[in-house]
Length: 589
Image (cartoon, rainbow, N blue to C red; front, side):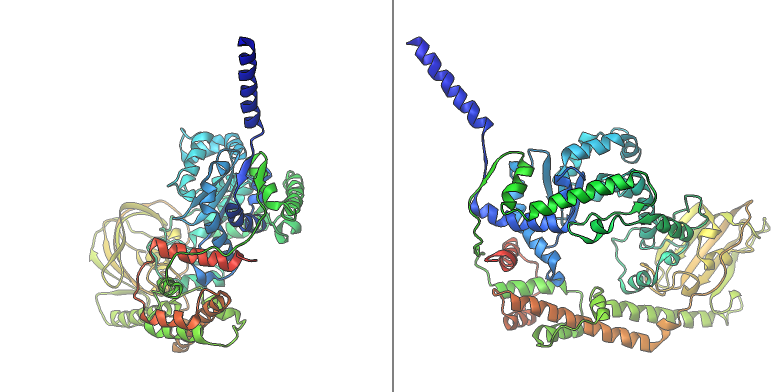
């Protein structure tokens, strides 16, 4: 009797053990409905597939579900992220090697290969510890990366080299491309007077962006970079680096899912790496074409058998809110910085039956809401500067260094050593805009005059140690209109020469920027016309989206836009819109 009971309990234990070994992950039909379009778009449009196949440690992809001004494949992907976001918090997507992290605040999704991430950080640990601190370990860095409140760039201290390494681009490629990106990013940092403008690093499209983009408190200050890699200037270094860096193979660049990175020419490991990535690309394409695609991809992630019921797309219901009024609130929040006159052009486009034109200039200008206001302000500031400097010409206590552009008066005279051809100085300074706002100040600061704006370098020429000057610099010898500072402003600098260091070199030439185009009223008129066309285009784009989405009525949305107060969407309203967007793209498709 005792023996039979013992055998019975052993059989029970064996059944439990076997049930654990052969356990299957089960995905409900509702979960599958949301997950299938998400993973299809994720694999097709991002590099996440290479993460799943052990060729890339992490992939980061932006999303923005509520920005319907970006009505395109990006918005479609964003809707799929919303649909899958709650499901991706479940253990199946976090307990194994592959895991996901969605940051709703910064609007990005991470696909992470834990093993590969730990491996690549461990292999380059000295470099990571040099940047992030000696106590950093691969495990602590991964834990921080996946923490709920962490920000991707902050985790890596905004270091482009480290980011390139964990994105799977290789150390050498990351070093060269990271340096190039740092140079290019410096052109879009806020200028810090009296350091030189980075506009020389910009091509015409970048200059246009600097002119049309409003001053933004989130833009970081420009930390002056010195040329590296043996180059004498940043522009030469940028040009040299661009010659050394190319894209990978045509297959990886032009065929989805692409794997695009800056590839340093003539490295021995390039061919092997690119061959491996091309083979992986074929595997991902094969996976995407599988009739059991979702089950296959989930089994790659879960590392075990996954059971899915037959897929059935159904139009899932949203909460009981008025979709037209709610959408109008969303649109109003997206265009809140547009003045009333320009909103009328947007509404005209919204109600227009005209076909959307293919004018690239208009489409490009739609990316810069309010750009004509920036041009108008720059023009006003330039005209104000011209008038102010014409008055300085009449003042006998001011010395002209360059008529109409650069003047100074001596506030405190001394008999110390004179600054002649030297280019390294120690100074105290305060720099003000025309409204008296202090833009920057420094005490006992060492400056290389090669690295300062021409107006400053030539304005202190001839000063004696201990001397104090007040210098007025026209915007044409400062930062012009291509800057994240207020555009077109002149500068007032109060400077004291503390010390002159032995140094030899030539100053940047005292040649004013050509700002005639901004003074021309025709340029402003053209910008205002392009601004109206851009708002009209935005309205037509929204109309096209509304007409394709059965949940909305164009006339009702337009009426609500005119009546709705400027309020933030509630959580319930945002969820309702996201559900509508998801249904629009994926239900019954």
